[in-house]
Image 1 (cartoon, helix red, strand yellow):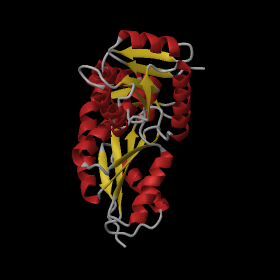
Image 2: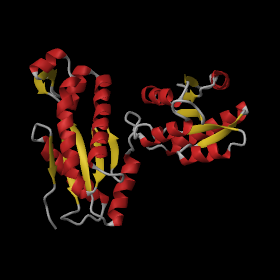
Image 3: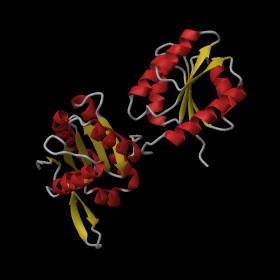
Length: 309
């Protein structure tokens, strides 16, 4: 069974040594000397939990916690803040920054281990995130759609899907396919950050299927940026030979050798601007139709439902 990975962040080498001795029997431990280095490590090493000191140079624990909670791909990681004895302001500051728990130094190893176990168990139970992209999964997507329908506000739902992804996976393998999916998630995040607002939602349905929920007047601009950035990056997913050819040689489902063009992206926009939506099942049905039409264009394309009721 794989051990959970814990990132410990502290500018005191002695504290890092104590944490390593306390945790290494039960967990994989990675360490950083300040918040800035800890943030970079969190972005590359995907820890299951972060233990950070509050007072550090370069970037303190509060700033690290804020940075983690602002990052869509990292905000799911629970944070335990280490504070000095009697330093109430540090405890308050850590919790305000989004820390999940705090423990006072010097700490009792058994207490720290118990808290870690509790937080990891709680996180795994509550975490509805895709394990590849860490974007919210189907439970959260359903809740978001139900909330928008119940609130009776104008909204748009973009159903996003990759074209020719199976052919790419067959040629380059699942690891490269996973890289494409993760990069697609980042493209969506950047587009929503640039064209949406704080209430825009992004979810990962599974595989190469994503969804975003935004204000109706933001949806087209979000889609346009997604399409343009995906098409700009798509050639980088291929080796030099395939990039020069503009296609890959693979086999279809019947075993016939075919030439498949580069990956592209299709988006179907469902909106309640011109029609009444009373149930989330309507959104899925309309979205499937629109996405099928967009995929028939054989290029990156987004289409908006124009039907009126």
